[in-house]
Length: 206
Length: 201
Image (cartoon, rainbow over the protein chains, first blue to last red):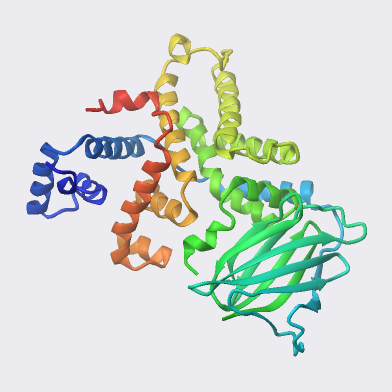
C-alpha cells in the first residue's frame, strides 16, 4: 500500500473513538491491514493516549488553594503600598505628526516608526513596523525604569476592545516584541509590582 | 488575531517566570492555570486524599514562589513542579502509612507500600499526558482537557459553547491538537506502564 492510502491521523482518531459510520470504519480497518509503520505507530500512540486518559485522574484543586496561592504571591512579590496607574505621555514621534486627542498613529508599510513615551516610573520606546505582504505589524519595545524603580522585569499587556490579545515580558535588556499584529487600535499596559503604565490608543494602520 | 497568535507572545515558561518576578499577578494566575492540575493530579494519582493533594499543591507552588528569583531562565516548569510535588506526595504517603519512604528506592520492591506501585504507574502516565498537554498552546490544551479529562463528560455542543468555537470545528481541531501533542512528545520517553497497558505492535 502506498503511504497516501494509509488512514490519516484524524481518521485513526475518529475510528478509535467510534465516530465513523460503519462503511467508513470498515474502510479504515481494511486500509490499516497494510498500513506503513508510521501509521501503525500513530495508532499505537492514540491507543496509549486513550487508555492512559481513562486510567488517570485529572482534576483541579479546590478553589481555596488558588485563593491562598494568589494571596501568597501578592504578599511575596508585591510590596505594600499604593498601587499606581500612570498614563504615558508621548514625547517623541519619528513621523513628527501632530498629536491630537491622544490618538497616535503608527503606520507605514515597511517603514519603522519610533515612539517614546514617558512617565515618572519608566520611559518606554516603541518601534512599529508593518510586515509585507500581509501588512501585519511588529511592535518591539524597550523599557527604561526611572529613578528608584527597582523592578527590572516588566510584563506588557496588549489590549484590543478591553480584551487581552497578547502578553509579553521584558528580557534582561528590558526589551520585548509583539509580532504579527493586525491593523487596529490597541491599548498597551506595562506592569511592574506596584504600578502600571497605560499607553492608550496605539493605532496600527496600513 | 487568531487565538494561536494571541498566545504566541506568552507561550514559554521563561515569559511566565519573568513576568512573575516582576510582580505581575496575571502571569502568576496564568502559571497556576497551566500547572495547578498537573501538580494536584500527581498527588491524586498516587492515592492521596483531596485534602492532602490540595496541601501538596499549595506547598509546591509556595516553593516555586520562594525560588522564582533563583530559577534558571530556561527551566522547564512541568518537570520541576512534578519533582517537587512528587517529593511531598511521597512524604505525606510515608506519614500516612507511618512508614519511611525513600524516594530513591524502587517502590516496586517495597512490599509495605502495597498498592502504591499501581499509583506510581498511573502517576507516570499522568505526567506523560501532562507533559504533552503543557507543550500545547492554551486553546489546544483547554480543548483536550475539556474533551478528554472533564469528569462531567461534556458533549461537543457544550464544549463548543464553552470555548466559543463552531461545533463543526471541534472534531477536526481536537485531532490537530492531539497530533501536535504526539509530535511534541516524539522524543519523550514513554511511561513504563505504557507497555503493560498496551503492548505496542
